[in-house]
Length: 204
Image (cartoon, rainbow, N blue to C red; front, side):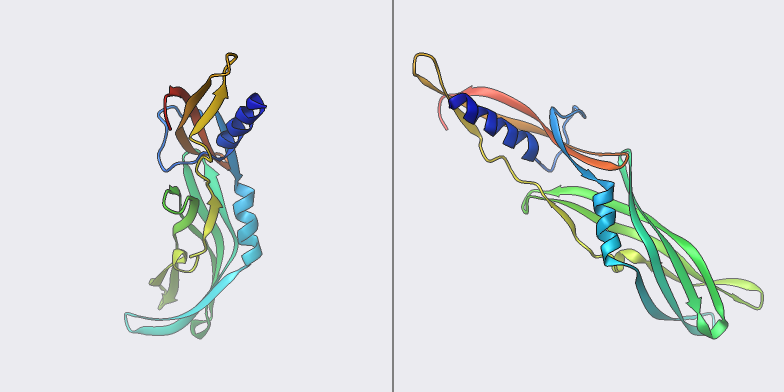
């Protein structure tokens, strides 16, 4: 029974030990994975976002409407990006076009809340019109103002810091469990794991 309990505690720690720092060794002993598809399913459920805004630049005044479709988060080696397809309309000037939106996404672990947080930090595109044959930038829209959506995943702290082991002579021995955490962004996924370390302990 003691061995069974030790195995259970080991598995719990393997799958749920998450901390806000990085290990020197980039390879965890064991890990959990957050897939890119999990993030994008959430964006898909939200659907397209749109907004109407006014501009006044160099004596040119008007109103533009933008809508973003197919928003997505792309996970690459050591980097997370935001991508989307934006349609822009300036009705008063009969202008309509599409443009890409590109930006950065932060991935971090918050110790106080014990959460893995994924946030769109910047994703901008320009609103451009033509006046007398010349291109004029009338606005820059940062979609991070609108994508204040919280992608939060639980990152439970270890349930146990010690394990009690019964020795053959019936004596009991405490084993301290410590972890060296790993948080890594790979192609298509976020890997969160730990290196587990065990050491004898005389007291809790």
